[in-house]
Length: 437
Image (cartoon, rainbow, N blue to C red):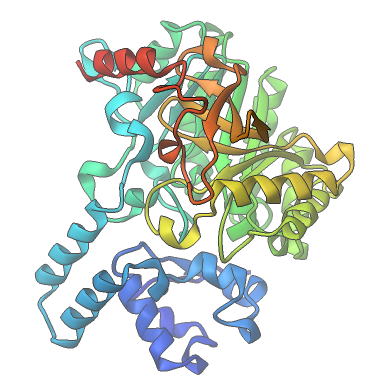
């Protein structure tokens, strides 16, 4: 399939767009000026059901619309467009809205960037002891932009909020100096947007004998869902698969971390072929996705998604709670409902699908998972634990939050049983103060 990309400048070239109501087309233009928009012909021709617009889940996951903006913000941008305001005035208004959308949640910029050899290690995040994230500068784009993406500032022409790393020896030196690191996650954006020869520049140093403590190389990607031809018919697809084989033959585990938001994304022949090729190269495909209102917020969808993944020899890994950024008000699900959806989906699948963990929030202290709801002494509460944490001693230690039917994120929860703080709160505060220095 020959690739064709769509942006705000040419989205009307999608054949079906011009048959939509003009009001909806205007919404895409206005919302797309705030939230990054990019699509391609694989998504528009093979995944979206144009007879189910605007409710089709893949359309909702791809095309920004009015409900992603608060009413007053939508009205403001619309008025600027209708008045013929200059581009600078529109950009100023757009940037003001973006800065109110929590562009980097969970302290990514403030607390996760390592300081090494007298400088901040640009494009690197090290939150948990064993795992470090690398953001290649050439990989900070995607084959398509998801409307719910928590890394939307990477694509929003906001230079101060973009995380990216050039190829240099400093990152390798950092890894050599930290033998406790076992996993490198190459992420973005989407590293699979890069040509293979660029991917190699970031992978090759990880295979050197000096980094024998690096056991696992992870690649975070949505390419299977948005452009599976990257692994089959793109001009350097065979080179990419050979690189994958070299990784696994070197003794490293290659974990292909695939975002699969909806079972529709697993139904085409193109994606099935791509999955087989990645697996034949020795990679293990683990799947993860956020729970999203208006896209996949039902136990039936999640159960079907996990079952299809297992049938394709993929490993269900995470159900995430949508992060508190971007159009969060449109996509978020109350934690109570998230737990109910996860529980019902989990109960309805066989044990082989139950490798999945969740619902999990990647928040300031760590990955906080809701493990249940309970009641004692007439008080109803959430049972929580961390799957990863800034301090490994916090991992799997149960803690409790008061029942709140409206809460959609960790920082909206209050400690249960009359406590004034969670067990880790004081230590976390000290950590953050130290990091800020």
